Image (cartoon, rainbow, N blue to C red; front, side, top):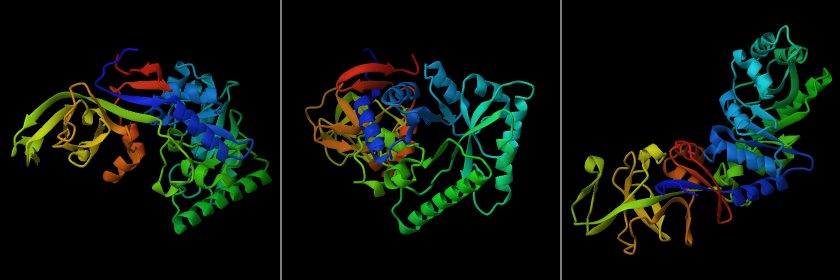
Length: 391
């Protein structure tokens, strides 16, 4: 398979399968698995990942918006897809035609969707979003008496079928005592609302609240379905969870050396002249920059792997390239592979460690990998597919 050996991402289907099996092992018997593939499967490629998760046995998939759902349908994905975000009511007919599930977060929104189908026999399956403490989308599941009346009205709408009900935990990946108590409070609020709904005849088939953190730390909260996101891709949502589950990173990001030159002391490097060589220095130009998703904020604060050795990035990261000091790797040549994150020899650079350097989360780094970088899907050592967005 041919692709430009400039910068690329290796996506391991072996590791994806491993993580799926590990998460499944945490689930109670009969619990379903929803594969979260929004944001291009966290940068891993939505259609190939969705296809593989479906083959592994994932019963549901979830995306952020209707355009992502259309992409999956056009890619041949036929299973249930839940849209976790808002879809304007004018797209109701499309939701129905594509057989999509839509979250419902307010009575007004439910009325708008139902009205769009007036005069037809069309119906769509919906999942009610309960806000138990995330304070984002949803019906208040606490301190709000009218919520039950609103949900009862929705249950009586002709064109909306309540298939599921869910909530979201903001700190289920934390072991801090106060955070653990808050997560427990959220779950109690969720279950209390479910019991109240049951009392008025509303019993959704699917109750789900476990994101990655909760799926790992609170498997007793799994109910009918879990929806792990980042953990599916082999990255923990928090370092607090280290040792609780065996996950393997699905993606490794690679680049190549364009040029190697020797520089004297007191030579400045890159924009702004922020780096000056102190000794004779061998510098390589690497084919990745901030337009590829390597944040400019990493400048001078990161190392890559070359021939199994850590090499510091120096000077400011440019749009399409950056520079590394390879003085400790004299055998390096033009065309050699440089690992931005992943494994090389006996060493490994983890994307969550990189995120820590910027005081951000690994989600942001993975989702930020640019579409001009091809994704190479590997089954063991064999390349099975190449996803190229540009050509």
